[in-house]
Structures are given as C-alpha cells and as structure tokens.
Image 1 (cartoon, rainbow, N blue to C red):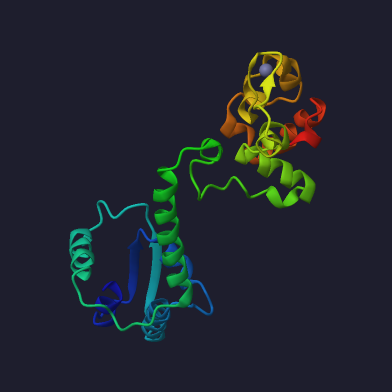
Image 2: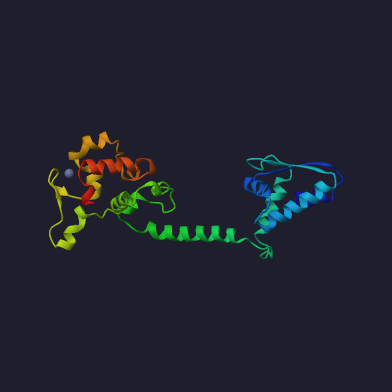
Length: 223
Ligand SMILES: [Zn+2]
C-alpha cells in the first residue's frame, strides 16, 4: 500500500516504517523465493529508477505511526479476501505443514503419561541439538535412560522374575530412582554436577555429566 502511494506521489524522499523484520530481511535477498517479495522488489526498483529515494525502517511496533490504524484495518480485511493467485513457494508450505504436524503431535503427546514425557514434555524442544556429538554407544545409553527402559530395570520381564529392588533404599529400582532419588549415589551425583530434576539432567550441556555419573556407579553396561 505504501509503495503504491509513493508511486502515485510527486514527492522524492520517502521513509517506510514496518514492524516486519522478516519482510525486510527477505527484501535483501538477491533471489527471493517468494513471489510477493519479488513483486515488492520490482516496485521499489521502479520507484528508485524515477529518481526517488526510499528508506525502509524497522520498528518494533506500529504504535504511534500515522496511518497505522488504516494498515491494521487493511490487514484484517485481507483475511476476508478470497484466496490469492500469487504462487506460494514450496518452502512456505513446508514450514506451515511442519507447524501443523508438530501441533497435532504435541496434542497427542499431551495426553500420554510416561517417563519420556517427564524428560521431554515439548516435542519441538531444542534438547536434541547436540546429540550428534555423542558416539553411537553413548547415544544408545542416553536414549534408553530417556525412555526409562534399561536392562537393569526391565530385563525381569523377559526373564520372568520379580521387578528389581534397590537394596540400599528397599524400593522399586527405576531410572528415575537411579538418576535423582537413590541416596546411595548422592556424593557421586554431586561430584558429576548432576542436576536434581529429570528434565535438566537430559539438557544438552549435561549429557556428558550424566554419562560419567552412569559410568562411575558401574551402570553403563546395565543400561
Ligand atoms: Zn536406592
């Protein structure tokens, strides 16, 4: 809208304020993927070619800018318009599809109650970003710990014996018990700077602490 006004105006210097940083960054691209960005670039090029000067300025919000209400009205109105024929790049659809799948998956995940849910309540979290730095063996151990399923806590099912008991605490032996509850490992936990809640234990920066703790309590081969 602002560019169209400039196009029809006789002034020479213009400043356009926008709160859309992503649009400004996209306008800097040499080969924009989005058809709309290309159209805006072409319009700016036409205006500048006529000896005009335009500054595009990012502002955190529209508040206090003249014409803001009109822009907001037009934006609201645009939602009621029929679908545009402007081609949408594949990338935009991929982002929207990913968001939709993640939100649906999260809704299903919210209904589930298990140990992994405590470790990872949000599916889209960035918890796994450094996981590639782990060896395959260490990664297996971390994943089993996250799932709460390990040789020591679950092999009794296959062996058809009784569930294991922590002899020190006389309680059911679980991964949660080993990692944060068992009093027997208090000192070793401190030594390896283990967080005292399950979620923090599995954060990126703490995985090596977790592995060294598991090794020191001689559990590595039992996980
Ligand atoms: Zn114990």
